[in-house]
Image (cartoon, rainbow, N blue to C red; front, side, top):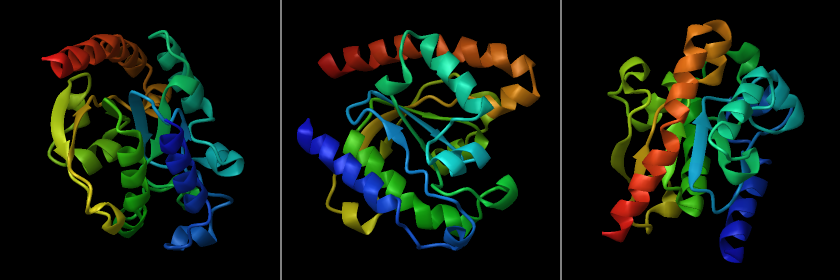
Length: 206
């Protein structure tokens, strides 16, 4: 476990000084991600916003407060999971990340995933979902578990074997701030998470 923790912290440390794309010129600081190195659940959003850029932590604004409530609704705490984003730096004016920015940042996230090896990845919102399951639509995929073989593409990971991961897409908490009807949808989907984890564990034991 200590080796796993050290590996993840080293990835976070390296990410904080990344200068590989143009976002280095507009960010305040990098937002690598945070949480438990042995987490069973990994939440992945799109990218940092203003508050995250200022604090260097993911999901600390209004959407982050709702995410905390959602996590607590399934008897977990923020410290029990790992939270990250597709891109680690805030795009100017909160615009969508450009394809080249996503591609440049992708190896950092891959390294985190292969270090943690979570049982469950929860893409938050359509942008995150599109990166993992490009043919899925958040409107129809949310609240449904999908298993896939996650293959490494980063040069540093090419010697790693693919890992089986269950994806459970959910709407981004920010969407529920703008569309109140999605709030109950989010809580309903989150209530399924303990059962999904239970089924994953049972499958492992077969």
